[in-house]
Image 1 (cartoon, rainbow, N blue to C red):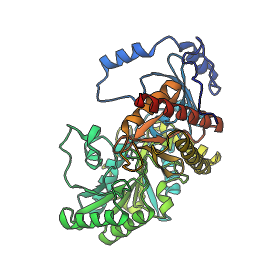
Image 2: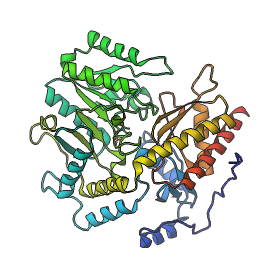
Image 3: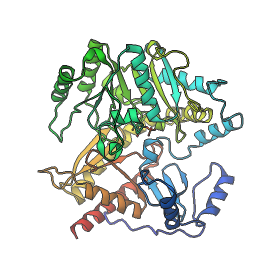
Image 4: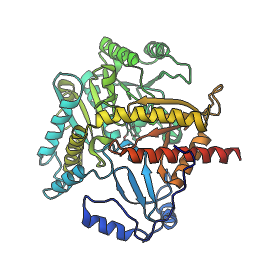
Length: 467
Ligand SMILES: Cc1ncc(COP(=O)(O)O)c(C=O)c1O
């Protein structure tokens, strides 16, 4: 493929073509509204009205989206490799998901499960219990956000063990509420200026090739933590992302996950797999932890579970899940019926469309293409291509010898990609990794289009930084 990708015209005609076909009446309205607003004016309003703490990676405003494509309010089209931060494994507006949500809306949109229960909540809990690894009896709790799921997993682990402590890992990300921020292992931008954080949270080292921390070093660090600060009999849970998400798309080595299982069993500690970013087919299995063969006690889920609707959950051993007394779990909106219907449809789509196998296939394709692009246009700058299945990231460095993280190059690639019509998102402790969260439903043609833009953006970015 040529590495001189032609720039797409940034402005579409007044009524740009869309491929919206699912809900034609909506499509007509959407297309008619394109061009009625412009990004610059909206950015100005945003700046004046929205707290600056909530940032947006792209300085453009969404008009409509379909599968792996998105259009802004000016009619510019983008290939979406960010998937709303790993929420859209089944793509924007999957027809099944939209139809299920609409059908549910025709019945009721909210009763609060705590007031009048409804079947979709129970059906989703049953489905999650079936899908989660382990053949023991399981139960589930539904909430609204990932952070809420993690908070509840900790509450459940504490109630089940009668212990307060939690161990999390360097570079882990578990949310932005105060308890989850305590577990999140990165200061800027998440934790800066907003502490103090809850007590009884301890941090163990995550294995890192970059930092020369082997699995054995990480396990020694954990054992040292037990000797110095974290009395094992007072630890309720060890929480880990089977693939670090915000921390850089680094998989936990399987032997590390297996060792954690043994350590938890030895000390009566609950092992929590935070699958909020890595779950629902992203890595080629329903849950990333399955690759290691380890069965966690509790699993937190959210994001791609519902194809764009806000819902999250905790799945766990039935007796552990039942440790919290009646009334001790829940929330007004937890397990919203429209989101439950969407989740059941998204899960069905993953099953019917073979998206687990597609994830593995896409992962191999991205790996090969990144290696080839790196060798051809950015030798010694793409230091690491890593991940599991289609949960992949590429890490940029100034050179291979020093492997110095190159956040400036990464930022420039993201900016140039957007200008050329590709939405990308960075991650990692040093902000120098680009992660791939493209819908698993994206066609080969769209994937190739995105990769071609990536390559062109990389060339642009290197030229800009050299010039
Ligand atoms: C692994 C992990 N845990 C928890 C969260 C928090 O989820 P939410 O942003 O829905 O609160 C995230 C969000 O990115 C995540 O990736």
